View 1 (spheres, rainbow, N blue to C red):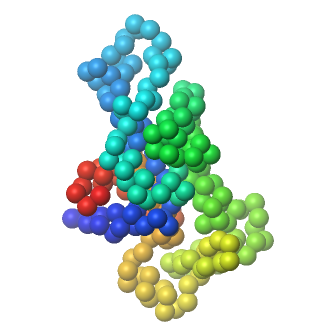
View 2 (cartoon, helix red, strand yellow):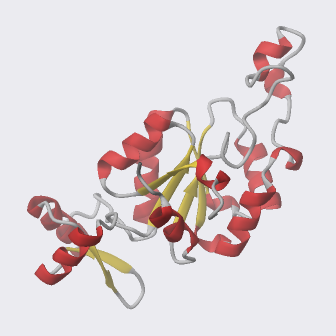
View 3 (cartoon, one colour):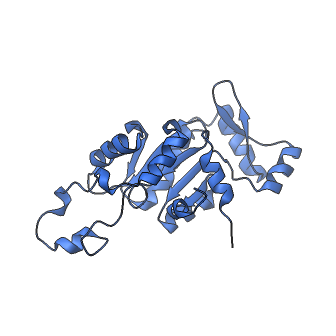
Amino acid sequence: MHNNSKVMDLMKDPGTVLIFDIDGVLVSYNYGEYTAHHEYDIKGEGDWSSLNLYTADRCFPSVRDFIQRHGTSNVYCLSQEPFGREDQKTALMSSYYGIAPDHCHYVKSQEEKLPEAKKILQSLHILPDPANENTQEARALKENENAQEPCALKENENTQELRVPEENEREALSAEKVPCPYRVVMIDDNSETLRRYDETGLFATAHVSIFLESRS
């Protein structure tokens, strides 16, 4: 059985970027009275889309405590939102968890999460913007992909850039099996979405149930 202790250690590092899903991760997914999906409880007794489902009593104090210990400057949200509830979600993330409104990102479908996550990495200069193909970052990433080597992070005066690691660094990275890059953890409750993140090699991932484990 795989031990997730390295993922939790990574999540506890204040320098790690944490990107949380919202529904089922930062807010309870038990919406209905007798069902998880509120629309099946209401059954035509009103327009459920007008209800505010995002209130503090539906959040998780233990996860809030974790985020507060981590610090919110490197905490982001990435949520599927096809019903126009972005403002409700953002207000709750800000008031309850202390997550900055401009750190809250929304997409219409689960499939759109990965491209949006990459945009967040580009905004943080962890991943180069493909629109700037001639930048040093873009060239380094392309060389890294062609070489099929683990990536390492090179300190810059203002940011951290991806580059192809030296031979001794590749050996160390391979031995430790460090995620590439290992500054970002995606936390979600959707296994298919987590799999999409995993397959890129760009993110460490954690299912939300990691917060139920004692070491969190």
